[in-house]
Length: 336
Image (cartoon, rainbow, N blue to C red; front, side, top):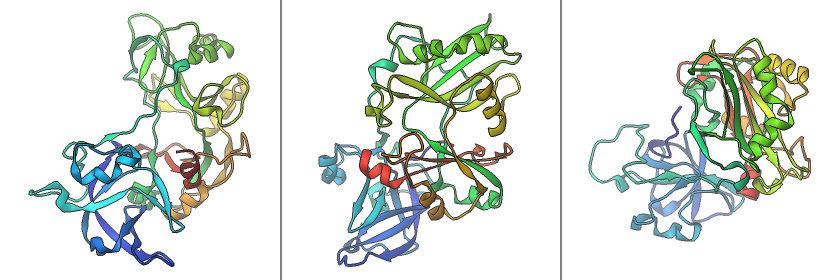
């Protein structure tokens, strides 16, 4: 599901903030955003909503006040109220007909903030990310009310979302001219080079031998964390991969959570921590509250969030694979 950084939306609710005379909180989709009372918004108004991690156009005078934040929209707290995103009047778009849900990122020259890539996981590009393997990216729960309504009551497993760098390791005999083993960052396949952490972890766990010897063509996807990555918030010695996906390439099928656990146990690989199981709710605020808590890898820090998936793999007509993430607001306030 393509992310709409700036889109036309409707304000579904406006609520007061205790002891705040000049501001209140608006609900847009499943997001709560602080707005100024003198902006004159009302429930039912159309607006332009900017998601967190949007980079605003520094040449647009309407965004001049965001210069102090380097034009990046972040999670903030005002008068005790967490605010995620930016709500602006629809008239910033100028004359025209705009539909609810329309992506206006390009019109407003809004792009996604991308953190710098650590030197230890950059390298020489071997090629693009393979088209026959899905990239690793879940959709945030705040924009998935219709999905939650469809699947409410589904038995799910909840895992910890780890704050690292995504990597994919794969072997195939089907989609290349010859048998092909590859290691990818989030968007690119990389050549093996001395000092590259992705390849070091691959060699550390003999992942090439495992995949070449496996009876199916597989991709292993996980998060690499540790020294030199995201300030090593988990305080690990060295680097390691925590697996969250096993993908069967020829059948275009993800392993279930239990199948992934069995695979990791067989080959002594680490898996992202399991927070628990339960029944999927369609209450966005409740799910975001569930995302709060401490990391199971290091209780001294906030966990980044949670990922929710059905115990039995399911496909949704809107987002494809049913896999939802909720980010911990406390994590965003402290670390982002």
